[in-house]
Amino acid sequence: MSEQSERKRVILSGIQPTGTFTLGNYIGAVRNWAKLQDEFDCLYMVADLHALTVRQDPAALRRHSREAAAMILASGVDPKRSILFVQSHVPAHTQLNWIFCCNAQFGELSRMTQFKDKSAKHPDNVNGGLFTYPALMAADILIYNAELVPVGQDQTQHLELARNIAQRFNNNYSPTFVMPEGYVTKEGAKIMSLADPTRKMSKSDTNANAFILLTDDRDTITRKFKRAVTDSEGEVRYDPAAKPGVSNLMAIYHIFTGKTMEEIQHEFEGQGYGAFKEAVGTAVADGLAPIQNEYNRILADKEYVDTVLKEGAESASRIANKMIQKVYRKVGLLQL
Ligand code: ATP
Ligand code: LTN
Image (cartoon, rainbow, N blue to C red; front, side, top):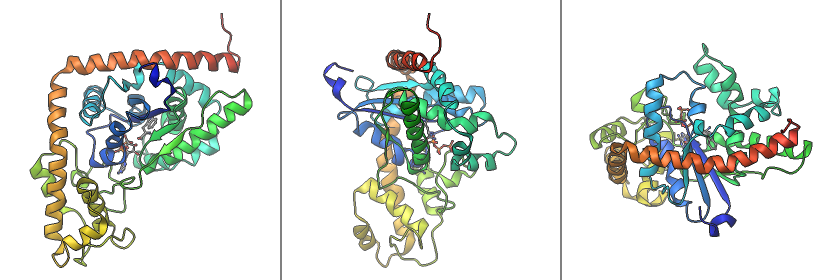
């Protein structure tokens, strides 16, 4: 980052390499990352340590980490302007994580809905990392004094906890951390599952018809939208409470075409859901095509991806190491 940009506010965000990104990840998070690069100093991270809170196949995790980096680059994140790195390549995150684990309270960690959801989903593996997950996420953010964190709505509770940890640390020791704010766009903050529109679209869903993957081809995209659960009313109208399926498809269509909800409603008046679903599929397939081309091109050049990640880890470490030294000193760890 240039000296001139040193005055810019800092952004950090992350995504877990738990699988191929879904349309929800793209709309809720990654799509916004590229847009923020001019205005802010951005750090974007592949959160591989967070992914370990759920059992991962080692070879698949390695592959998904590189694929995640390639997809972030394909979505327009420019490594000349932003820092792109893998979480485990910057050990200072885990160092700060421990300090934060000793500051986060059992009660507040127990209230996290993601912890409750994932414990219910994986009852055989309710591990310590899953429980302290938000302390590591707070470390990811606060170690760079990031002021803005672009995420989907499901992460706002974790952000609130990061703010509480920051505040507590600042009060107990001395002002150290900047209070981070979520950057959650109104549209698309929560893209719902195509199979069950009352649940969020998630890349670890066991039903492949529930999500669109960013790597899905045109036929697959079209087929999945055709099968998307709607309702029996047959009217394209935006009403998330009464018509969650149709409203979700309208939100997706709006994001890819820029048309307002009223315009969409008019466009498909009296036509039923067939034509509407077809149009959503076409808009999404058209919109994703250039990203998919870029992704395939970038992924084929492993050396390039690895060089970007290496340089990213070096740049991120320079900032993070300074902060961890400061924190160690403040909490009273012996410095020689
Ligand atoms: P997993 O299924 O493994 O929990 P996920 O698909 O929920 O993964 P994450 O890696 O946890 O994805 O999230 C990456 C980013 O994408 C986060 O900022 C998150 O808020 C956002 N996100 C995930 N799902 C959606 C969704 N359905 N709608 C909008 N944003 C989403
Ligand atoms: N928990 C996030 C991923 C994540 C993250 C972060 C997001 C890990 N560290 C720091 C923003 C900032 C998720 O999407 N599940």
